[in-house]
Image 1 (cartoon, helix red, strand yellow):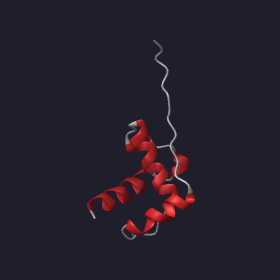
Image 2: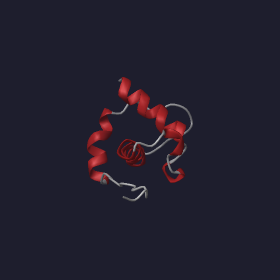
Image 3: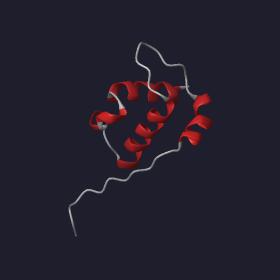
Length: 75
């Protein structure tokens, strides 16, 4: 049995993202994250059981993604 971590990568298409986007709450502040990047960041966290703080930087600042996810889940 190997101790090698496997990173799963599930991604939405832009079309799928566009269908879900109307359910998002409005973005606040001066930092805007496009819906496509936001959804794929959330999928990466959920699929790989990441802590928000270790979300790869190419998704954006982890706290921005987390706050937006929290507002979305509370709406």
